[in-house]
Image (cartoon, rainbow, N blue to C red):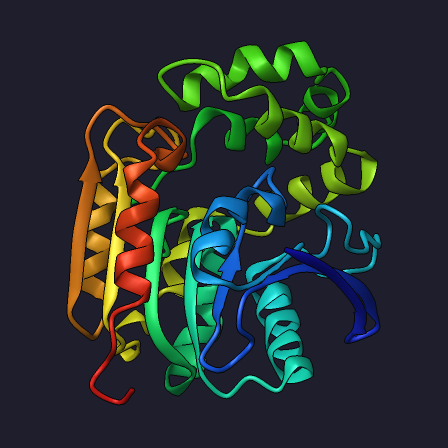
Length: 271
């Protein structure tokens, strides 16, 4: 993998790139509190691009950036334009679902779509307890201020069947600075549940073949939204609920990577 960096829409942006750059590439979008490095095992198999979204990883973390679904949609549109991409396969996890806003507006851009335990852009979802705390002024700041590496490891047991692997946690902690904490708080505060539902009103416009993978025991994003997300899309969508796994299902069941790689590599009718 190669780390790239450029100015995109006035921001310094870092991304990982691997494999053959021939179109259509795979674009991987991470969520909270991760960065592009979490996609390493996937990039090694499929090639593609994985940016650090503004506010995360090695990308810029300015206070003025609009950390919201609309703000990230604009950024992703600029990023795709900067790279000259006219077609791509999109893979999203957690808050990487901001990429679905771009996919709804520009469905012709999407060759294939993979959704892994992502924030549901659907009615009926209710934020998990950490998100509810982050959304509260002062409470969220205090919670961020009292987050330490040991506590992060203990808390990670909730999202998986045990603590997350040390290298995975090390990367989260390495970039968990004030800029990232601010980005997380602003992002969650920009998104009451009704705003999530509004942001997904045109999911049916996405007609690309889709794979929806979900940790059956995800404590943050209930697995019931796997089927509901698939049903909201406008094309054929396959659902894989991975038994015994939480929010990062590929960490507990490495075969999930095989499933995604196989799906990404399948030709479409227009290929």
